[in-house]
Image 1 (cartoon, protein in one colour):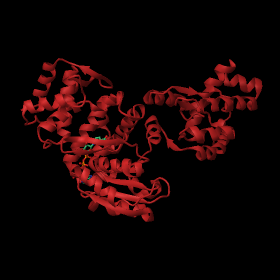
Image 2 (cartoon, helix red, strand yellow):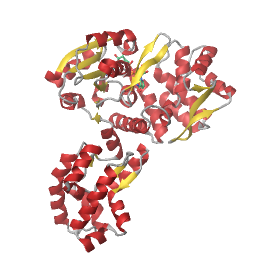
Image 3 (cartoon, helix red, strand yellow):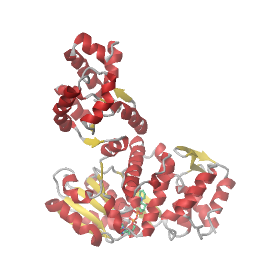
Image 4 (cartoon, protein in one colour):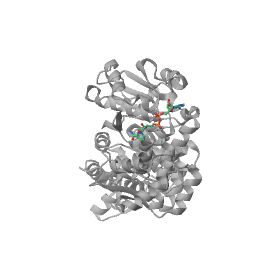
Length: 462
Ligand SMILES: NC(=O)c1ccc[n+]([C@@H]2O[C@H](COP(=O)([O-])OP(=O)(O)OC[C@H]3O[C@@H](n4cnc5c(N)ncnc54)[C@H](O)[C@@H]3O)[C@@H](O)[C@H]2O)c1
């Protein structure tokens, strides 16, 4: 009571694209009386019976929903069982003082006396703790908890406790990261760590040959977990290996680059590259947990941070919030939550997840034309410029120039145009672009005249 459920619930439902169901509202609608009237006229026990019936009905609906459940409902064992079986339960953290401030003006039946309220709060807390699958204090926190994302500075030291189940853990580490953070992570995993595999640093490791080397050397059974320490390349590789080894074992990425913390580790897309192109063989395999420790970024070279900043700016433009102005750990938290919500709405990338490609059609074309010598962050920065200019958002394009200082690409124009036309977001020979109506309002599948797109691409090339 007073934790903020009725404010946060609808916001969360909106972000997850799910209906919002308030059990209290269902009780009121079905009985034609308010909760206060039911308490006064029929007594608390009768209210609890109704609440239990409608809570179970709401929790067992066929289609997922965000369900708001009052704290008192947990007194009923059938409700607790329904929660355990059907729901991911998030406890909204609050203090008795905060909760009292919120509820006391409303005169709710159980919020009329400050002392009684505090006693009830303290009595109920252990019950809440017992059913909670996750804890949060805001909508981002709920999205992160529901996505299995654990994020805090120093989280890498707690990896032993965060690894799922009790089975063996095989650690896959990027060769460049191993000397920097390998020892710390191995220590945190303790006895559950049964093997560790070092793979070539960065994109070089994202090959079928490396995947095969891992398949051959892994000795996990179905209870085992593949844990990955590295950037997006190592995560894509090891995630794909986890998706395919024994037809799929649990995996936990521990991202060490900004790109991976805000993007690559989230959403369950895994892949390796072929000679012919990037990410051509892969699978969707949602990680069991994702452990994000912003402290791991302290060793990241500046150019890798810049790559990540381009994704932060992209995410902020999509969310309509200047995430780039926040301190780094909060930037990571907000961006991770934004991407996680989009991916929970569209886990298999069939619809609105396409928004995450903002600027990327141009970026990929420039990267391909450069033979992958153009850093990804610079390509994304240029791609964002093109997308914003085509969206008619000149001011935002100027902002991107100020934030990311993109230098024009030195690539062959025709090669870049050919790469853009071959891009997988092309349907029936026409490029479908992600543009913005305004920050926070992406429009998907926009078809423009070829010459307009070509002009926007040419403007990115020196
Ligand atoms: N699956 C997805 O949804 C998704 C999303 C975005 C990008 N990606 C993929 O991610 C890859 C790019 O990943 P990336 O940008 O994270 O880089 P990366 O994994 O290629 O790593 C870049 C370099 O940074 C080094 N490094 C990593 N962490 C470090 C640290 N903490 N300190 C010092 N050095 C460190 C690595 O050794 C490597 O040399 C691409 O292959 C891209 O396709 C995948």
